Image 1: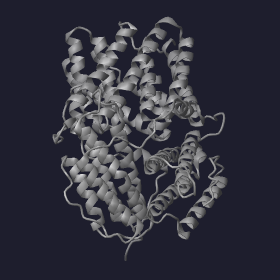
Image 2: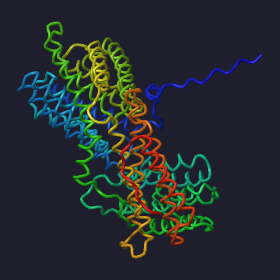
Image 3: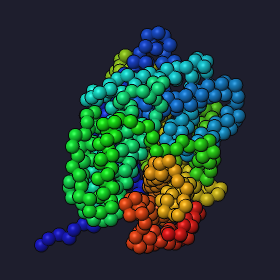
Image 4: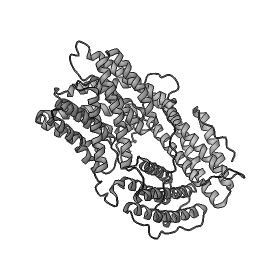
Length: 628
């Protein structure tokens, strides 16, 4: 007699997110940098009898290590350097405020800093890193009992982050010795675009086509960011740099043709994907393409693919190209992101949690039973990593932070009992620094490693072991953030999601309007209309990807918060289909000069679905009043 199958258990989204971890190979180059950063800096400071400054430098190196993600060297200058500058400013502000003002004024000041920093987080990932380090450094500067002046602490902070950045720029990547190793991150990013194009072509006509198109968008975004970072020299004169720009630009028409073929929902021969794979190999090995197999030219999208392959082969050989098909964000656009609907909600939530944590910490610090414990700054600093809406769902981060802190504190208590002081603790700091790049795949693991590192720094600085205090203050911070994060907020909740959806809708409108405008008699021409189209297409897909990320994070919140973004995924799905259809229309217009009734009907249908979905979920988004 067979037993009945047990029903599958479906975890709530907030719990499933907490149990999910990123996958991938071990970033050994980042592990080496982590081992050579915080530990050696602390050792040098101890030998020079400047332990307190060494602690600050090690904290900065730790924070930079958290931001040390895979990518190009040029992008790491922005990703690591700009937040470090913000952290140095926070260190100065926090130090002088902590020395000059009372507890109430200090709490108000930290709350205002949280309001501004939280709003800035809505601009993008680098701005979010700046916000995090500004807030953490402000709390540390105000509360950590160090004998050094504010400017000395800020200088030590810059030295710590700058040392890790110098390692990132100088050390070659293992296995990345082809050509100029300084561009290995850029080469990998561009090659991944061609691999993603090939994967999308293989998936055309299958159920995997949508996920492969999303992967292609992610690869294009990553490559665009890798090539758009600050130049490592005054002039972009190297042949390797020009070649990479040309290779990226040549991938855009290929991506467009592959998207059109996937939209048609018809399988293509395996020969079609061989060319992009050979181009990917040529990028990685820094060689010429050689002969490329041509696909059958039996349809407009296949003819566009063949033309794009020929263009790519010519661009690879010529090695010229500098247009990344992106437009810099204006000051007005940045201001709108920071202080618009999404930015205001970010800022208000961060300010309330940061300020409330600082207020509770100050009250406990000056209370009779709290004694002379000097780690009150742990509360607001912990709240920063918990409350930032762009860093993950609130409930998931609270669970992971609590579990990681308990695990790390208990582990450190055991290490502190057996390791010699300070030599063993300095070695523990070095080991923890090496583990951070691996631990960043899961917030609980990252918290455990950071807890060990911070507690080791506290003891090296001359204070007693603080494992139990660390656990208690972290749990208190978790409770504060959960309570404050779910309080009723002025205005409409879900502002971050709505802001991303509005940006995606506007980008889709601009892209569709440009493609249709090119078909009108007497339409204004441009020196390179395809370049404009590719720029608008990139902006549309990037905005959609950002909206998808914001929606996924909001959906993984507790129901009280997740309900404010219900239905947003339906809107973005329609927008994605609309942009895919617009891409197919653009490819067909290049070949035939006019749309087919099928294209027109599909556009009209999608615009109708978008209007209905907008009314159904009550989202105020830009209209798409286009006649097709």
